[in-house]
Image (cartoon, rainbow, N blue to C red; front, side, top):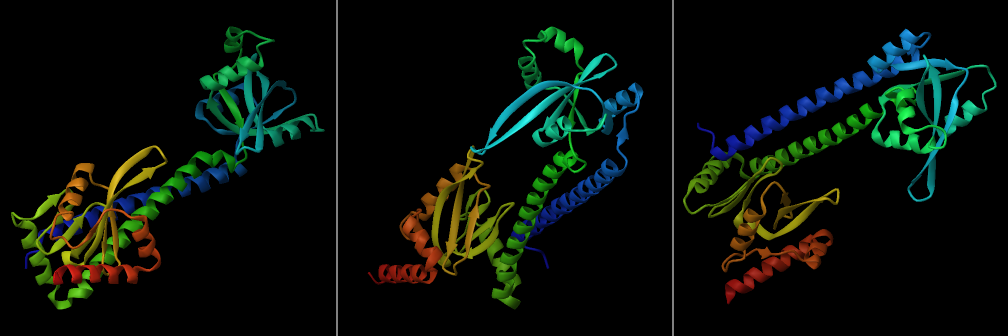
Length: 340
C-alpha cells in the first residue's frame, strides 16, 4: 500500500531531525570528552616553563602553562562596570622573557594574591592569546607616560598570557557546550511535539488512519487546495508540514488564527502564524515568509469561514485562563450565524 505524500514528507523531516539530533549529541559528547581531558591535563599535567625553548613551544602550541615568576612590572589596571553595581578590575603585569615583555592579564583577586605573596617566587598559570587591537590600545594608554606606542610594539610579544584556573581555561568550550545543549533541547522538543501530533491523529482515527491519510492526500493534490509555504488548506483540512511544526487539523475545528511577530535577541523579527483548534491545541509556524502568512490570513477572513481571525489580548487571556469558555463562545457564535 502506497504511503500518502504528506506522510512521506513527515517521515522525511523526522529522519532529518533525528539525524541532526544524533550529530548534535555526538558533537556534545566530543566536547564533553575534550573538556574532561583538558581539565585533567591542566590540573595534573600543565606545560611547565623552565627555559626559553619551553616558553616558545608553549606559545606556539597555545598550551596551558605553569611558570614561576620572581619579578614583574605592574602595568596598571582597567576598571570595568558590569550589571550597574558590580565593578571588576583587570590588572596587567609585564614579565621579562628573553629581553622581551610578556604581558599578563590577571583578575582582581589573583592580582592581590600576587602582590601579597611572601615567597621569592609566584606560581603563574594560564593560556596564551593574541593581543587584540583593543588590548593594544589599552596597554598604550596605560603606558603612555613611560613608553611610546612604537617602542611598546617592538618590546612586547604578539601573544599575551591570560591568568586562568584549570577550569577557567575551558570557558570557550563550556560556552559552546551550553549553546549545543540548547540546540539539543530545541531539537528534542520539536521531534516530541510533532510525534505527539501524529500519535493524536493515529489515536483519533484508529483503524481508519490509512483511509484518513489517503483522503488528506487526495485533497492536498486537488486544484482547489490553497498552498502557502508549509501550510496547505484543503476542502476539509489545514495541513502544516514545516521543519518545526506538523499537524493536520479538520477545518471545522479551526477556532482561531492570527499572525504575530517572533523576536530573536531584540534584533531579528520574523513573522509567524498561529492556529488554535476547538480541541484547545495551539500550533505556531515561524518558518514562513510574510506574504504567505498574509495570504492565509486574508483567506480565513473571507465570508463563510467560521474561525476567529486576528490577534486579541482579551481572547489570548481567555484562552490561557478559561479555554473552555472561549470554545463555547466560538461554538455559540457559529450556531447563531447558522440560524440566521
